[in-house]
Structures are given as structure tokens and as C-alpha cells.
Length: 294
Image 1 (cartoon, rainbow, N blue to C red):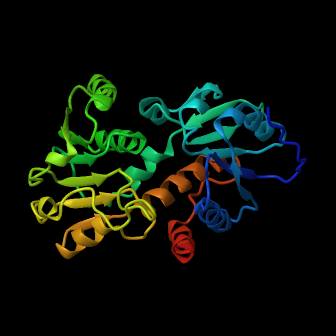
Image 2: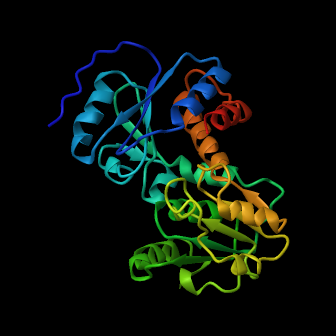
């Protein structure tokens, strides 16, 4: 049992919990958002190993935090501590944002879904289109939920371990019967011409994790149509090898940094929306702060 005994009486306290956290852009992004709203607030990084989650939640409630974000490996176990969840957390089966109400009850949200959707420019129309998602983990699940709201006709998952993807496949097929879902071996990708959007949710290309590699072969990328969009949820580096190669082909691209900022903005809307402001934090201010830190 770990004891978190530090008395703090500041108002508008927020935090990120997870383990390990290391360097995170979240405090910088959120502070820029708070400033744009004219709200005096703090945002901390709180390393929280899974076996200390019970004590951490007690600490956050007792120390009068207003809310907190949740990252791996706690997005699933935190669900045991919330009193209710929004529709996205329910569909994604994961919570990444929590609001602590005045009566100390907790409501869980999934702003990864919101962030993914908002990062897609409004002039990109995916209605009736096919989308390919690389990976079948939590980020792929959130992307899938967001894409169903774009009225796509088909979502194809590409993974290295098809047996481990069966649960996700069965789940999304039950939830969204009007959409076709398929799963394929990622190593077998040869032609992507039928897909309007290619989404990478794997860690391949992330700084420090195969950062000089791509999740698909360059020849496969070249088979995308000229109006296709390449979306990489990785935000560090600013441009992954996948994004750089897509740009060389004059394909439209979306980076993970926009998704990260939009999900943070959505969290602040949840935390402050019915109390201190009805405004949204300024996306540009938050992005400038993030880019300066990368």
C-alpha cells in the first residue's frame, strides 16, 4: 500500500496518471489551454503503478483535484473506480479522462475518440469509404469508434497477431452491424488502393521505438490513390517516416499531435464546461506550446 500524503489546497488541480510516464507533453499542452481560457489551474504528472491505483484515486479525491487524465496501463482498470461513463468510454471500453464531481463521484470519458475525430479536417469526406487501420490495440479501438461516426462503409484492421484481434472484431461487429469489418495479416499488405484513409496506430515510427521504420512497405504506400489520407497517431517525432513518405507522394496527412491536442481540449471542455466557461481552449495556442517542446 502506498501513501500519498501531501496536503494541497489549490483550486483547479488536474493531473495525468499512468506508469511509466517519463517525459510528457500533457502539462505543457494543458497549461496553454488553461491560459487561453483565462483559468488559473495546475496540471501534474503523477506516476501511478497499477498496484497503487486504489490509493492514487483516494488521494486525488481527498486532495480536491477536479479531474485527471489516464494513460496506459490504467485506461481499463480505472473503469472500476468511476460511477458512470460517457458513450465513448463505454464503446471504447477504456477511460482516459475523469471528472471529479463536487460530491466526489467520478465520471469517466474517452476523449481519444473525440480527439481522433476532430483532427480529421471537415473537408475530408469518408462517407461510404473504406479505411485501413494498422494495429488492433487501444488506439485502434478508439480510431474505429471515431470512424464509425464518419459513416465509413468498411474498416479493415491489419495486425501481426490475428488470434489476439478476434475479441475486438467480434465486439465492433456487434456494435456496428451496418459497417463491414475485416482483419488481415499486416505483413501481407501489398495493395491499398481501395482505402480512402490509412491509419497507423502501431508504435512503429515512434521516437525510440523503430523510429526509422515504417509500419508498411513503401511500395504498398505507393498504391494509395492520390486523394487518400495518411493518418499517424504518433506525435513524437512531429513527422514519422510514414508521414514523410506520404508527403513525398503528395498525399494528404494528419499527425498524432493534432489528435493529442484535440483530446486534451475535449478534456478541458469536460472539466470546465458546466462551471467556469462554455468556451473551448485555443487549439493554436496549445499546438504552438507543444511544437516548442518537441
